[in-house]
Length: 336
Image (tube, rainbow, N blue to C red; front, side, top):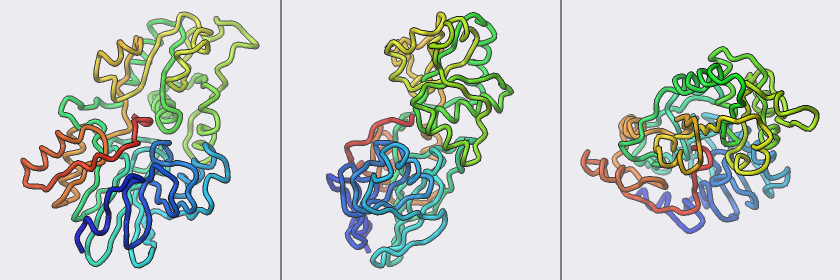
């Protein structure tokens, strides 16, 4: 079977005609396979959703229990048959519950990666390379300029600043699903055992991570209604990036503005956001890791779904791999 007959791009997303399902569709469809819980990949309104148990739980937390007509949980490593097409979910290392999806029919193996990273992350299962004929990869940071430093180094910068400015609160912008919990856990692993204050938008997801066995230590709501600004002197406060642009951020004493994102590699982005302490911590693979992953899959074809597509396609061509950009729309960088 030709790969393009097994999976093909459509306006709704990647479609499998033999199995009659979509992967991470951006519009409501009858049958959706979802790689992870970020809102650009996991959307409400599908008739049927197949995903890992954790991704289904996260979708229910974000959209409500009735986010789909029906759901089915896929165990990691379990092979599910859908109209003769074999479907297997394997860890993607992106956020809790994230998975790659292996699609097989008549000897043709295609892996849709979803979003993924190769760095160690104490809050989710690590990425597992899968040998295949076609590897469908993201390319959020698909340019050679993007080479992420170790997260421990970036957390070290944050802790050094907290020690240097004990009179100031440190506000760390981090996406609500995955990045926030990872930053908190990395702080704990670095020896920080003080209470970490969190924005209300992080509470439900952080509670879920704890129930799933991810230790986050003492957390408390980042509110000043019952106290004063001075109560947060020297504290670390974690919240979604959007909250730092409103009145919520002004309640803290002379705050140090920080943002945990792979985009903090670009100084202009940090300046545009008014970030005083950029932290280059990403939940996506950098350039070297994208290349390493392609090589480990041994794929003869690489399809690039979203991000910096052209550079990665060019690298494939220079290394005798058939590369093409799918130009899928609707996928942003919520979990960067």
